[in-house]
Length: 203
Image (cartoon, rainbow, N blue to C red; front, side, top):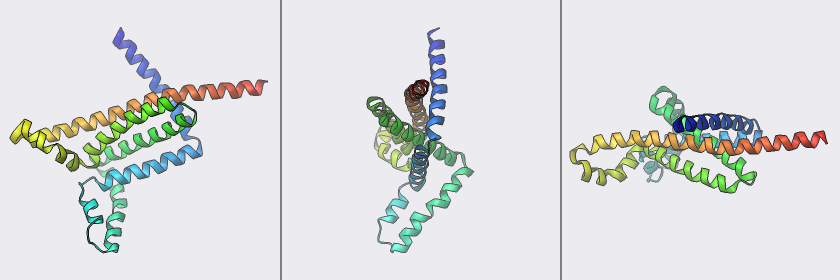
């Protein structure tokens, strides 16, 4: 019964989160925040998708036109994300992060600062794991390589692949949890605002 109650609570709060997200994104200023955040996140994750090679080229001794070429070639690479499961994962991760940013700003502007900070911390962890798993897997696994080698020896590569998948799942889980939590808080804010507006009109 306890598990069923938890599932029902999550289901209800998810519905409330969808309602509040829809309400927030219908407002032009928050829609702009969402779109701008999405472009930043998807560019950043795509830029580091194949490791830190692009970053090294930008800060190398290349001519400025070549550096601009490295920066610019990320844009067609963003479109290529739609052609693979890995790329679609980057798109979805960017969408979730962008929803959280819009939800955070809405909650913050409506004086729910403590809740927005909690959502930011959870979403931040999810974003970090997402970067390690999807944005720059070679960077993340490279940082963990000494530990993996000590634990698994020759099986470090296989363990690294497994950890990357675990990080991906954890990232999406934490981001979705943040959206549900913030969305529920914002649903209460939206409901109160609509009630006050309706009450004010009736008076």
